[in-house]
Length: 207
Image (cartoon, rainbow, N blue to C red; front, side, top):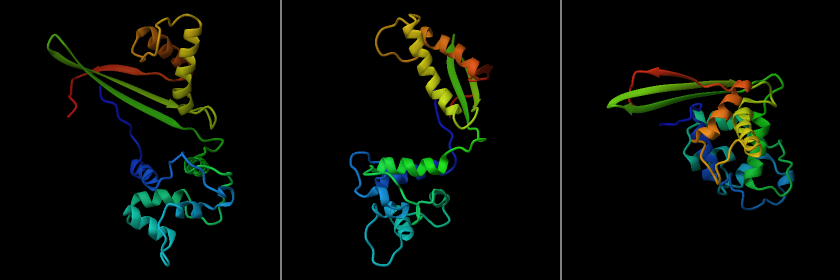
């Protein structure tokens, strides 16, 4: 079984840059973060230079060209705005980054998110290779009841109720590979629009 995640071009690189800079660190707090601007926050992770701007220093440290798609993503977050204030008291870098991302990525009241999953299962029966493709498209209801909330939160809640009601009796920590676990949850998820459609297809391999 191969599992992958499809993301917009540049997403993984942009996130890795936050990691390289140290903005995902949650082990210490920053003094006076409440009154700090976005621009000042970014500058904390860059070396001092008497003349270079924050933008130039960041591009130099991370080797980003000005026409790089990743640079556009950083600009979209308004990271270099000297007027936007963080407003979090003694926050960790990770908490501040979360706040910046939340401000930029929060859905509007009429926005809906969408999750698309495509699983390819290859297997062999009596020496013959076969394949099943399973697809799922889930669209959120609104900015609160998102597809992400459905697909992450509902299975855990359903499993909890199954255990409390005595329907799941397997002890200990379990992977959801047991029919006792996944069958009732997949069935109940269909009521919330989370439906996997399976079909047999010719085996194509994974090269």
